[in-house]
Length: 177
Length: 177
Image (cartoon, rainbow over all chains, first blue to last red; front, side, top):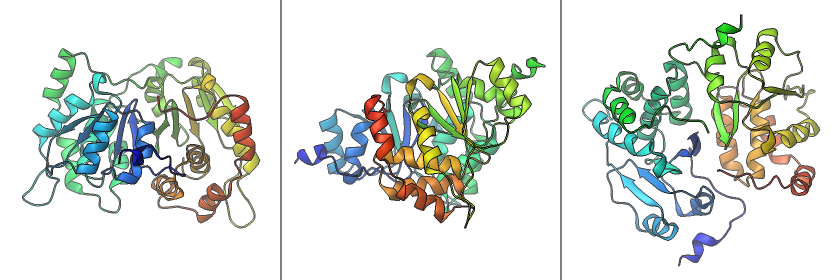
C-alpha cells in the first residue's frame, strides 16, 4: 500500500494554492494522495492543519510513513456573521509555525484560502509588511472568494502575546535564509 | 544620499507581486526606492532584470551600495500578435537564475506579471509541476491581465537546451532546501 507513495508520477502535482511563505514554511490546500509524490520533495518535518475534522486515513498514513509530525488546531473560518476565526488559536498556531525546530513545515486548511490566509497574513505582520501588500497576497490565494472579515482579522489581530512569546524564545525576526 | 537606504521605515514595503519562488529565488515587480529597506532583508547577491530599458539611477546606486550584481536581458513580452517573448533569452536567463552561485537572486520585470511569470513558469516545468498548477500560479500574479500567449509559451517551451546545460553543470533538480 505504501508503495503508492514512492511512485514518481510525471509530472508532479503540487496541491492547489501551494506556495513557499518564507524560508522553510509552506502553505497549501488540503493535500490529496496525488500530491504525495510532490510533498516528499519538501522533506517536511511537520504539517499544521487548521481544520477541526479528524485527519483522513490516507493522509495520516502518509505522514506516519514519512515521519512527519502532525499539529492540528481545529478552527472555524470567518463565516459571517456569527462564526469568527479565533485569534487565540491563530496565536497558538503561530507559536508552532515560527519555531525552526518544526521546519520544514506545511500549513494547510481545506482550500488554502481563508484560515491559511489569515495565519499567513499574521506572519506577514510579524515580518512588518505593509497591510497593502499583505492584503494583496491574501487576495491572490483567496480569489474569487476574498473575505473582508479575514482582512479585518489580519489588520486588527493583537500581536502582543505572540511578540512576547517570540522574544522569550528568540523566534523573531523570521529569517529569509 | 545613501542614508535613505538605511532608514527602517515602519512598516516595510515589499514590491508588488513579491514572492519566494523556491529556495533563495524570489520574484517581484520593478523595485522602487520605498522597497529598498525590505529588499535589504533578503541579503540579495544578484538581481535579474528582464526589461530592455537602462537600469534607473536610484536602483543602480542601491545595487552598488548593497554589492548586488545586476544581470539584465532585455526582452519584450507577448504583445500580440507580432511581438513575442524570446525562448532563447529565457533559456539564457534560466542558466543564471538556477545557479546557486548567484543566490539569493531576485527576478523582476516591470509589473512582475508576464515576463517574470513566463520565466517562473519555465522554472516550474524544470521542477516537473503539472501545467494546471503552473498556470494557476501564473494567473495569481498576472491577474487581471492573464495572457493566453504567456501560458502557451510556458507549455511549448523546449527544455532540451536548458536540461542539457543543467546536467553538464549539475544544476538540477532545484532543491527546496
